[in-house]
Amino acid sequence: QVQLAESGGGLVQTGGSLRLSCAASESIFGIRAMGWYRQAPGKQRELVAIITTDASTKYAESVKGRFTISRGNAKNPVYLQMNSLKPEDTAVYYCNVQQWSSGNYWGQGTQVTVSS
Image 1: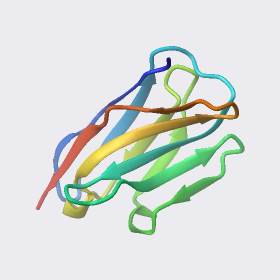
Image 2: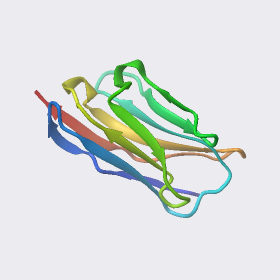
Image 3: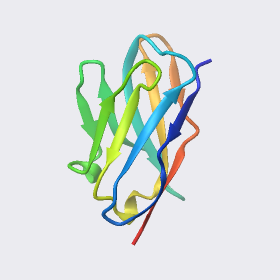
Image 4: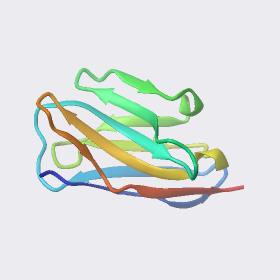
């Protein structure tokens, strides 16, 4: 079973930047889509950004123009560059990798806290 591990979270001031990484326990092939999701306290998990194998991207309206999702390699499949961070971006961020087969993997999450 593939395991994902996010890193790069932390505490940052408003306006600051963070880069999240997603590492896989083994190389993942046949990827259909990769994404970042977040869950704030008391709220449902929401999509932040997603990128497909043809490099198409989709962003939540709240992060457009500030966040950039990018592809890596088979062991580090996806990154999220977050700029101009706001307090409302505070959440646990999760990476997700979906394969063309039934594979659908989630990480344990990394905390991002933006102070005002």
